[in-house]
Length: 436
Ligand code: NAD
Image 1 (cartoon, protein in one colour):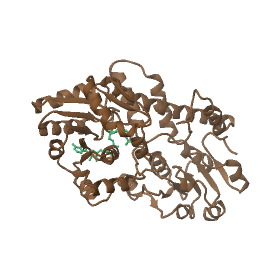
Image 2 (cartoon, protein in one colour; image 1 turned 180 degrees about the vertical axis):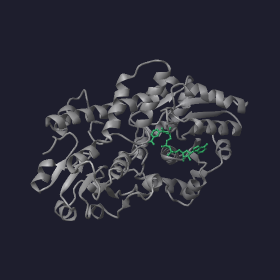
Image 3 (cartoon, helix red, strand yellow; image 1 turned 135 degrees about the horizontal axis):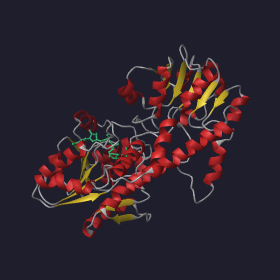
Image 4 (cartoon, protein in one colour; image 1 turned 45 degrees about the vertical axis):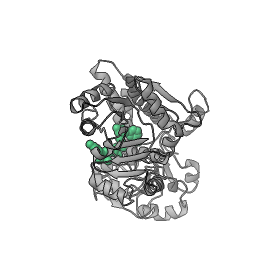
């Protein structure tokens, strides 16, 4: 099939590369000239395991093309995906200006019947609004499909190539069948391609993210209670995940969820519900608990060192909102850094891939270190923020020698408190007893 993807970010680039890899001819469009120039030279603008190889292979085999021209891509394609950003506005509503302008550009470039597929996460009802955006600019027939994306950064390729399910929102069976054919190579193991109406498809995306965010916030609230009462949330988690009704995913207590999806999608759902006067108490509570949680590590640091952290320095291990990505959108590390700096502390940080993306947000306010041990050198304590694999089993003797005082604030509960205590560390986790 001939496919265009408008917006070559985390979602667009992964989708484009995967569709090309299954034999389609794909044009990926972005209006960021530097991004397209880099991609044309084989430089992948984001970190995502396996993406580099996949993109290069499909470019070399002539199935994957990059351009800044929407018209060129639309003319060459029958199916056009929109995968532009829908970032949150200050009031929590998604900013739809990128999607509107991309939809209008597509409309103006049409040269025949097109299937226009919305992959961006959008407010419920957007498929109707898209009709209104496109209609004035074209006399060619077109279909609007809602096809929300469920990939997770860090395992985006695997998620896209082996999705749990694919959701296709369209009223027309023929359109569903074309979409199902496009996705067929990814669901050979029998995972479903679900046909539903566009509004339900749009709501499914928000429902999934809001539900997962709620699970995380639920655990974080229990962790605070564990801290107060002296329990261990990790043991509670193990007790919960063995209940098959509950399952094991998205039940880790930590420093709060971040990234480009959960915070904005939860807020978007709340704002949609507000407009129609429907109370969303559970989702609102998940959001409030998360905002509190992002500050919890700094509260623990202050409880140990006192409110003024002047002349203190802290080693931050991990900056990205989760491992295996360089995405810093809504990353808890940003709040932790802000609060530490506000209290007068200095921050020495190391992240395997997110240094450049962090610099784009906060510049040189902190010291960027070349390794985890370099960050720890001379610091008053270690603060683990992102659970990258390389942080899981450090040489604790070496680490102890580098730190000014052997104190660990473990924001992801990756270390064994009893082992660390035996090695002479003071350990603070999330929900693992006020002090072990
Ligand atoms: P992103 O910011 O990484 O990429 C969006 C890209 O679109 C950017 O490169 C931008 O330059 C480009 N763009 C904007 N307007 C354009 C236009 N008119 N023409 C061409 N290019 C244009 O965003 P993302 O993380 O890939 O997210 C895209 C959408 O997918 C969002 O709605 C998001 O909520 C949703 N989503 C994201 C994820 C994720 O994990 N990142 C997962 C599922 C769904």
